[in-house]
Image (cartoon, rainbow, N blue to C red; front, side, top):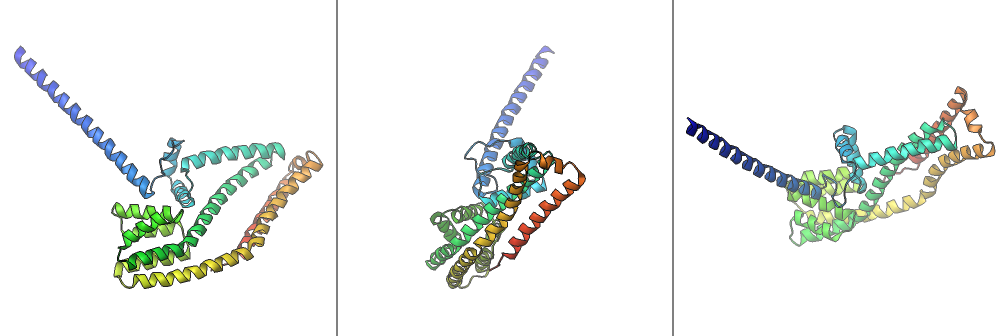
Length: 313
């Protein structure tokens, strides 16, 4: 009886040891696969690069689960900034709190929330400006990109190889974006999906035309070289036209920013001439309504000037 108990205990112990060894091996294999997947996603642009230690990781994971967080992630990816959604949100909250305190202390308690809302709007406009700036730089590189693709395909190279070659030769942002496309193609994504995501990240008419040309040529074949060379000439002409329009409208764009700045400066001037004037003015509901109406009119003027000066080419 004692011998059977010893044999049973030994067998259970050996089985437990075997299960522990198998579990450790499975865990190590899973960790290696996870690290490999994260590295591949980093190269394809689906995750931010890991060149520096990331802050606020817990906040970043929570934000990415929401729809607004995913929209913010796409916008940050389009700007080219090396900032995660969690880091941007944390910095934004800190800046908003600082503006609230500064507006409340420098002007009046009523202006604290207004300064915070202005900070949120400014941060979002900064992302929009950074994205538009990157799109403009990318558009300026499109003629050279089209020329490289035309020469590479004319030499007999496949379109995938031509995209990888253009990614190595071109500078940022075209080089970075094409590297993402090449990496996505390398991990098995189709040409339509990779180029479609590129057009979504950097929306512009010029890029849509180029992507459509490449996708149709990749699907049905045809004279891709002739199409790309004709497209190169068209893109060069559009580039010069956009440059002339931007030069002529530079004064109007500066006016759109000068109008709200003058209104904000008048508040500091009023409070500087007579200390506490803004606090007394915003102490009544009528004064608060007047301030809100004034800010609304400045915002409407800014939007109208921007809309009137927008010319689609």
